[in-house]
Image (cartoon, rainbow, N blue to C red; front, side, top):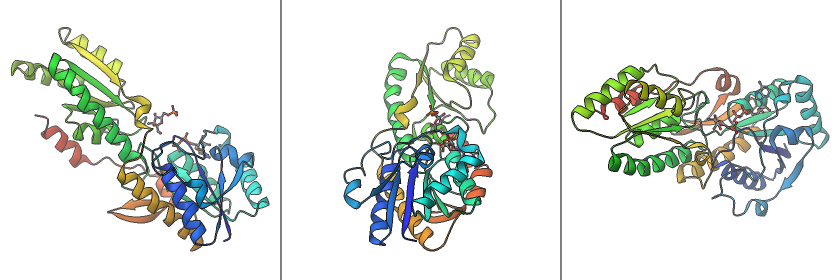
Length: 320
Ligand code: ADP
Ligand code: F6P
């Protein structure tokens, strides 16, 4: 293989740039030409191709977002577009593709791979919801940002004796909420994977008030319940309680990647290039039990990654 394309797709995640840098530089060392595809699958369809050399990726390791830009292209679900993307790459002598992205992006990647074009995925989404990998690029940074925010919010919660509801990202998964909740010392964590009872939460709060604990911190994943809706429900049951809502939003997606995201992104990038050169295809680069590994793309995108229930139980235990 002499020419490999790389693209970023879907939600941006801190550490994507570190992965791009690694692909470009490891490719250079292995004497493979790396072609950057701008704007994800949109760029594949519009031949937005740009050769990348080691100096083109200088100064990006510490930057959030993605220098290749990203996009959401609903039309990429159409097979005609997937064939067009393959034709566009073949016309430019591209022999393999690396897709850096989350669940949706890797589903598109699988579709290309199933049409006979060699592809490898790099697990990257703040949601951490790809099956088969313990971590995805961007998750660690997002959780650290959320914990930082919770630490600051706690100051007002304690000082004023208020109940704060902090909403974190995770449209379909509670991984950010669970880690940020445990790491930030939340009293309650609401995630889509676990049933919860608002009655039980307010009963616990009343009991805590009786013991003179006046503040509470609730962390909810947007996919479990929106903070504003939860606030209304709490107010219905406890009109006397002073509540405040903080929706963390996009601050979780951006910013300089943590040490962990930089390291795994660099490792994933190297692994992806070597996998393609070694004849692998239709696989996702991830990390399992501290070891970089390849996961069949089909499993990664069709199987549902389970939440760590022990961690959830621990979060309950340490919030008594
Ligand atoms: P993420 O990769 O962060 O989960 P999305 O779910 O928005 O983000 O997916 C990114 C892009 O991947 C979509 O805009 C689309 O171009 C492509 N994609 C998603 N699902 C599919 C699918 N079933 N088939 C082909 N392409 C898909
Ligand atoms: O990147 C994943 C994610 O952060 C989800 O948790 C969130 O719901 C979604 O992206 C929102 O992104 P956008 O507004 O770009 O669709």
